[in-house]
Length: 477
Image (cartoon, rainbow, N blue to C red; front, side, top):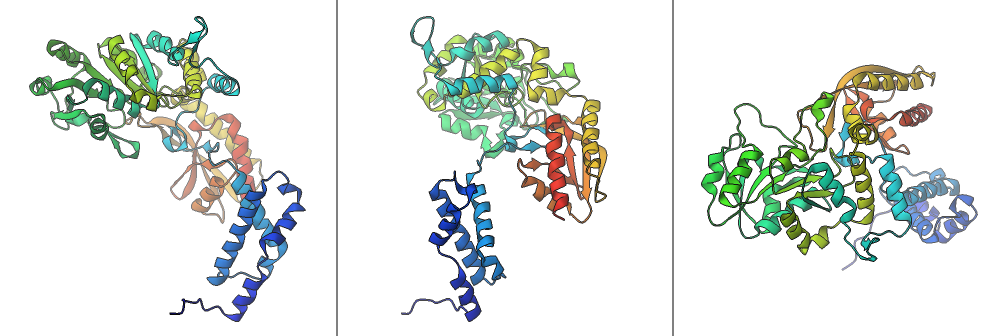
C-alpha cells in the first residue's frame, strides 16, 4: 500500500527548496564572532531546530516569505536560538508580586553573609565530615547541631533535605507499624498535593484520626490510645486557618497526656520561626522555642520559609529520639549537602542577635518592613519612569496588601504600596509577557486590567532594572 503523501503546491515546494543546508549555515556561523565561544554541537542543534521550524511553517502555510529565508534572517533566528540554549534555565528574577516567600520563585532569598559562606565552601574543599580537633572522621551535622540547640533550647538536632523529609523519617523511626494519633483538622495538604496522610502511609505508620474538622478535645486523643499506639502528633495550621466554632488541644496538654501513657509527642510546625512576629506588629506564630519548652519530644520545621535560610527540614528534640532518627538508614537518602549546610549555618548564626537577623535576612526584613518605607521605594520607581519622558506610560501609587506566602501566616495581610503601570497601546497581558521575557525576568501581577508591581519584594537595586525594561518596551511600540 502506498505511503501517505503530503500534497505540496509548487510555490510551497519552491520555498522548501530554498531552505539552506546545515553545513552552509555552519560556515556562516564560523564567520561570526558571536559564535566563537559556543560549542559546535549547540550551534548545529540550534540550526537544525530553526530549519525544522521553518519547514513546518511552510508546510502549514504559515506565511513564510522569501525574505524570511534569506541568510541574514535565518542567521538571526539561529542567534536567538543559540542565545536561549546557552542561557541557564535556573535564573535570577525580579519579584514584584508582593509575595515574600514565593514558592514558585525560590522561596526565601539568602542573607548576603550566607551567600558568601556558601560560595567559599563551594569553591574549595571543606571539613564536611572531618573533625579538625580530633583529626578523624566527624559528623556533617556538627556545623549546625550546637547552634540549633542553643537557639531552640532542644537537647539535640539534625537536618534533612526538607520538612516533608523530616516528617517522613521521624514517623518512620518512631512509629513504623504503630498508630499515630492526630486531629482530623490537622491533616494538612502542602504545595504539590503532598498530604500528611500520604507521608504517614509512606512511613509505615498507621493513621488514627480523632475529633472533627473544627473541634478536637483531649478526650478524643485519650480515647484513641491503646497498646498499638506509638505516637501523638500535632500539626500546626501554618498554611490555613479554621475560624469560628473551633477547639484545639494545646501542645502542653498533649505532652502531659503522652507522659501519662508513655507515648512520645511530635509537632510538625511547617514553616517554623525562631522569632516572635507579634513584636513587629504581625500575627503571632508559635516559635520553635515554644514547642521545645512545651515538652515535645520531636519538632520539625522548614529552613527556607519563615527562617529565611536554604531549603532544609530541621528536626530538634530529645537526645534519644534524635539519635534514633539520625541512625535511620533513610537519613542517607535525605541528608543535605555542604552548600545547604554552609548557608544554613550562617543563617542560624545571625539569629544570635535578633535585631541583626531581622536586618540581614531578606525574608525577615521584607516581612517586617513598614508601609511608608515601601511607599518611598514606589515613589522612587515612579520617578524613574517619569525620567523616561514618554507620555505613553503612566503610573499610579496604590495601597494593596502583600502576603507572607510559602504556606506561612495565611491570615496576615501586610500593608504595602504598589505601582499601577499602564502603557498606551499595550495591554496589561502584553506588558506582563514582555517583562517576563526580560533579562532578568520581571514577575508581577495583573489587577484591574493594569500591570501591578508590589514594592515590598523589590529591593532598591532592582528599580533601574525595571525602568530599563519598561524603556525597552516603549522602544518596540
